[in-house]
Length: 284
Image 1 (cartoon, rainbow, N blue to C red):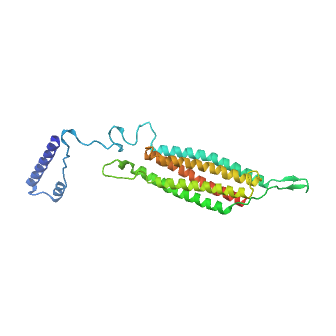
Image 2: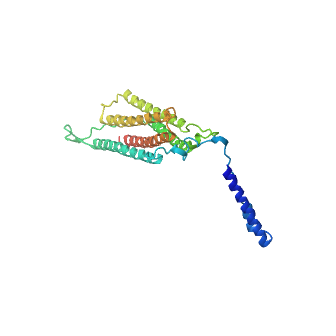
Image 3: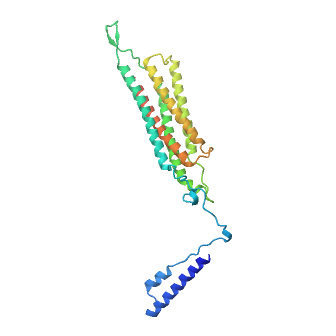
């Protein structure tokens, strides 16, 4: 503190000496020099006695000792982790696309296929069109699209949580633990409602004595909707984990990665269901 005061005194003395020399030459200071001298201000930093000053805030980026969110230099950054998980999701979804492409190919080929009919001495088709519970399936489609819309809100709120994470630990600032949690639980409820609706559609078909082994068309219906429901149930399990990350004390970056990747997966499941519904309805 003594050094700071001595620097301030020296700078003040030099300013006075420069002003005196300027008056000696011209009798008064020029306007430009006076404006510059008036703009100079010296702020002496205040330090507490005894070295009891407050250190850097833990968890704040750039604090001493590498205690920020960057962590170890060998660990990948948050953006790099997000890109890696998104790439992994794309690779996983490619296998799902190939699976349903093979289902579609088998569906179309089997529907257009013909068998030999000895009675008519000609080729004919034994494909029996399936009567779908269209109203129930339309309601289920609306529920799934609504859940995708709600989960997109959760994904955006999770990104905001990451942006606000550095100031959560600062004194005098109160920030909600997670803005995304209510939207996540709402998505889970809507997803369970969709699965319940699919089960109700199956129940309606069984009431008409339409089971998996009734016809080729009914077999494809149960297979396509069942495989899609299994994949959607996997997304619900991941959302349950994302909803519990707050109680598991996971950092907001981890929660955002889980929600972001699951949201893209969920959107894909919604688009896939629309494709399946259109295939079963228009190609029956």
